[in-house]
Length: 510
Image (cartoon, rainbow, N blue to C red; front, side, top):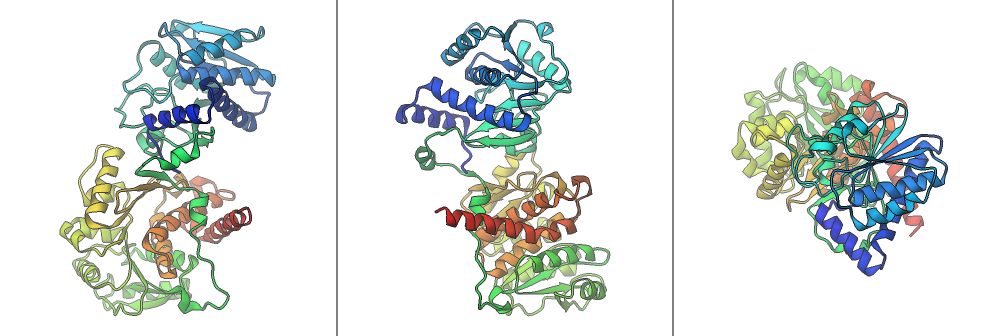
């Protein structure tokens, strides 16, 4: 799914209006119908709603939603913020339709003290859309503050009012803090960064029937990964395959006190389809690995507490390095030699990235399509400190392009940055993954998929998605506060099953 700017979505609107053809007021009706259907699915007709409207087309959407809720006997009140004199034509048309409903209360608000929020009502935010480029002020800002200070659930229509969608938002802008955001056709870029995403709440992308061929023809550097994108990548296991068919992974991991990271990454690797796994670890981890994970073979380093030597690499088909490894000078030498001599794809995580951050010239020697998996602080150490997620992503695009590498910038919507500067945001996972060890699991998964025969691009897409999906599926039994990295590993199988079912369903229907 492409991520388009506000201007590009407006272009798709206008193209659809001109070429379907459909009148703009009828397209607004389609939008309102999609929103109302979702609202009723989630809440039913017994809830009470107030719809807070601006005087543009976003407000027109709100008026149409209010009318549809009334038609199914939902208790609804409408508040129109009179912050300007003019109104959009479609807003006016929908307001005239509302006036024909005698039972519906419509309040025209000119001062914030006229705006009263009752308890236990759901607020539908239809004040402002995607056109905002400056902070709200006056009546709108005051009403936003009142809504945010209430304890009511808030459903934002298309975008939380006050949030710019195509550029960084300065701190302390008045923005609706939504419980749910129902956005139209494509997700907005601002929703996927913490600076804007914290206002979005649960994100639901609604198909409003914009011209699919026109959207397909539009250029974009940003994409949002979904089930269908990932399930189509799956390589099924042949009946006559054997362990050699699926490659041999090598994981450099662990040091004294951090063998847990080595165990997590190794366990995730064998759960994710590699034919064979060898874990290269310091001597202090030998009994831990052999006892806890009998499926893994061990390549034992000559040093007791850290990694200091590079084994022969000719038999391996993928290599991961970094989890719990430490940054000892001997270990840094191993990483440098590995970068220079590896015969197969690499995944660099954790301490491997920390070592490179102290030796930035090594970036130039990384083999093409090497996969780096930094969290934001690790990425900043690799480059420079960034003031916001937008700037960090632009730096990642530059770095990926300059060195022909793949950067997995981990976060709530992990951004996979390709050498061609395209960015693919992941739609699975969430705050339950904000625990130590989650990144080690991801390293093991991607390393396994590379060994399994996936190209670096596809292995990264599938690995990141599978990692988040396993965490999502674990939430059926485990509260996010209690999620462990090992719980994610335990649900990798369920995540594969989910994706294979999606793949088979798609094939059957096509």
